Image (tube, rainbow, N blue to C red; front, top):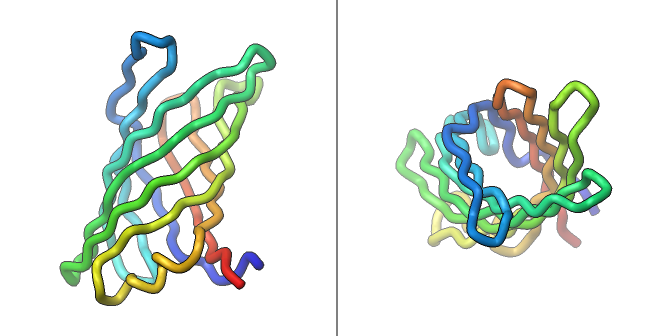
Length: 131
């Protein structure tokens, strides 16, 4: 069941490259709150675009909170490009966090929603998905 808000963040795509297989790799830097605590995060995702204009992505990254907590995550998502050039993605993240404040995220998925405007500005929210 989708539950409480886990994080929300804003940031920017800082790089993009085309890989040998034709996929695109993006990197973003964001800041926001995770359960009310300020954090920063850097992550990359590989995007594979389909003939119908939709896309599939695999994400990996890490976060650091102002209190010194850290964590890593991986995930997958599907999305599409809107007529104005903005992109929308939805998917799930899985965390691999050390013992501490965010270790319980290791036992759930976090369902996310991402919006990226045509200028590369990135906005996302994620909700707990657990039983």
